[in-house]
Length: 343
Ligand code: SIN
Image 1 (cartoon, rainbow, N blue to C red):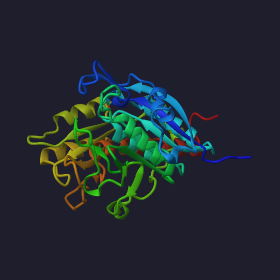
Image 2 (cartoon, rainbow, N blue to C red; image 1 turned 135 degrees about the vertical axis):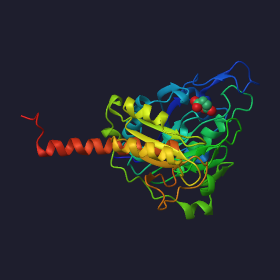
Image 3 (spheres, rainbow, N blue to C red; image 1 turned 180 degrees about the horizontal axis):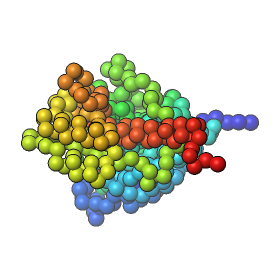
Image 4 (cartoon, rainbow, N blue to C red; image 1 turned 45 degrees about the vertical axis):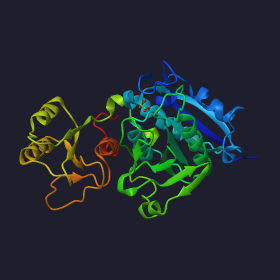
């Protein structure tokens, strides 16, 4: 007999949620990534704190994928994480994947996974702003809320659950360096709230709901070895912006550049010229905004591709994946037309 959706798989990657400080009153000086995911799950699956009712029917399976501060997140871990999510979500008995992650680069990982996992089940990330041994640590409640949401969410989607809020990977970003509620989805707003185990979807989100899934064609299994991932940098436009840093990047072989433009993606004349020159050398250019809310709306003044609603760091992820898909397609075309090296 085949039993569906019996398990929630929790993947640990480190972060403050797994961090430890010297004392239970110290929340800013600490080492991230000290406790294993199995340890973090103990209070929820153990005797002291019962998990929410929604997770009772599920067995929890813990897997330590990495143990890092997320400032050190890299393509190697991303690739491993993507393959791991894909493998677990493909199992019939798995209902959802939950990931514990540092807050600093969480929005990039969430967006990356949303573009390369094409399976009709949810991925729920969670985190903490205080280390695990702090007297009022926020991690246990966030993990509990994330498991609760994972037990109930349906369909494909990548989400963040933290500080009683549920955000969609397309919109969420870290907006505060220290406060407990460090994430925000700007004018799109949170998708839902969770309070005392009750999840409430917010009407404003229903209106702004992003299209489910990505337009991307890459799957986790298609991701090449990291040495082959394209090199994409972010350049910020500011007063006295010129093309000097950009020309050094072009000389060094950069493949793509995301410009965090001012306002609605505006650029000084000299930076624009430098970008046109970079483009003529084959560098892909995409313009986002350095404003922390709102989409770039394309106008006739925009000569480069614009990022739409994605912020600069997510635009960089999108450009990396776009360049990778083009590379894969040209390799496939070459194969079909008969490689000069084929026998
Ligand atoms: C990290 O991103 O791993 C450290 C900071 C945090 O989790 O809040």
